[in-house]
Length: 176
Ligand SMILES: N[C@@H](CCC(=O)N[C@@H](CS)C(=O)NCC(=O)O)C(=O)O
Image: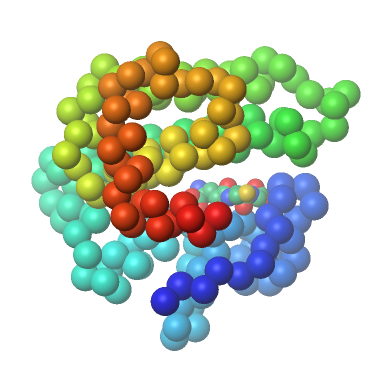
């Protein structure tokens, strides 16, 4: 069982309680039953997959490099979305730089366009790559619903509509 702990990660008002276990002060930070502290999500996912003897990380060959690269794409989309979000909620108004925010959001556009151009990258795959991209799209809906990405990327939207219904994905997002 995984227990969620209270946290208040913020890039400026840093959460000292998280820093006590993870010097980066970021979430996710994960405590294993045998007392190890793991971060970031890449490491935690690999740990959980190992623990469950899962198959979310293909072990060799092309499938492995594809999955890991897709994972990097999903992580990168989340990083860009988070940087744009911090512009809105963390940076004082007089210090904002609209081009910076726009450029972060453009990383999402170019990533979505790449997925739209190669839907076979996603279709039929359930591994760390598709999960990472799915999480990035979930975050877009949470924080940037106004960008309405589905109208420009219908194949990605189709894939995500199916993927989001997977019980494990729906159960995870219900935790929010
Ligand atoms: N690549 C990291 C990203 C983690 C991340 O940026 N988490 C945010 C969530 S709000 C955070 O903790 N931000 C606080 C900060 O940047 O100091 C991962 O996948 O674990």
